[in-house]
Image (cartoon, rainbow, N blue to C red; front, side, top):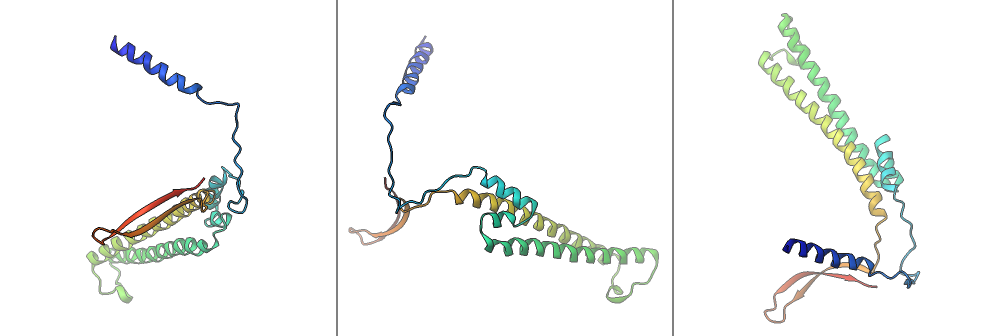
Length: 188
């Protein structure tokens, strides 16, 4: 019985608040044009920027007009691809030398003094570094897409002087110690 009374009371209270809004009087806000710039929100801009970056790395940054990020995107991905290629070449060099050692052919060049266990260890090292380089390249590619998406979202964020978060340091009048704090101000 108590539960039924509680449910009926809750329904009456919550349903009555739905009718509290008045549609007759509309408030019009006039904003001084010198303070705020008019802007429109393009809901598809973040998805578009991420799509562009997924197709061609760095194109989302160009779409967001953040040209300074292009060298970071191509530098990171280029370094990853370069080290992948270099480690892959070294891996195949050690692997072929190990195959030659197993076939009974003499090793030549700088690999002549290595035995089988060192060749296997060198193969594992180069293979691990090659795979790590591929993960770094994929990471920069994913970071490129995420950066384009987040940057397009933040471009639409309203930042003006009416909403500020100001860190402040104040000296206490009692013990003259410095206290740190934040002040959040919203001006209508």
